[in-house]
Structures are given as C-alpha cells and as structure tokens.
Length: 118
Image: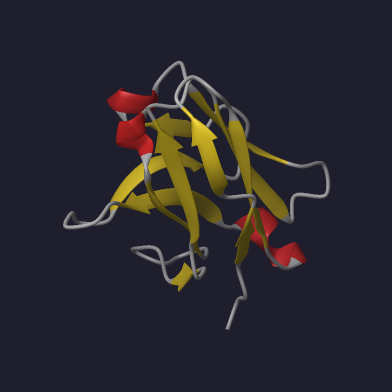
C-alpha cells in the first residue's frame, strides 16, 4: 500500500485561492500523480496531473490558467494551487498515484472537500 494523504481543503469565496496538498512516501517521486475531483451526482474526473520529468503536466481545459500542479523539492508532496476559484470547482478532490509500469492510477487518497461559495 502507498498511503496518500490530502490536506488543505476548505470553504472559500468565488475568486479566492486555495492550495491543496498530497503527501506520500519518498517513492511518490517515481509516480505519475493526478488530482481528480468529484462533485455530487457527477463522476470523478481528472483535473491535473504531473509526471516524473520536468514539463510533464496536464490540465483539463476548465482549469487551465487557474490551477497549477507541482511537486515540492523532496518530491514526496504534490500540490494543486487553485486560483480564481469558481462555484463550479466545488467538489471532493482526490490525489491518485500511478506507479511505474501501471496502466492506470492504482493508489488513492481519501479526498479533501473544496467548497466555493458565490
């Protein structure tokens, strides 16, 4: 098992910023890490991901220019900086890791709630 622990969620107003974190073991540096979100009544979907090398980031169109995914220097924590938040960003945000050789994300955190009020 690879424990992934999210933190930093909360309640903010539209237009404000929030940074959520995903902490894992040192081996997280070798994983592709993604942030997913799930709003009530909707399926969970990928928001952003970061690969092992530099410049290997992905963003869904709806968050491009507002969200930034990054790793810290020790590479055991992945952040999602969320700026200009909108009520539509309200969801439970999950961190997920894809270990080397895996076809899909195979480790998941418990999720952190992000609520954006209008």
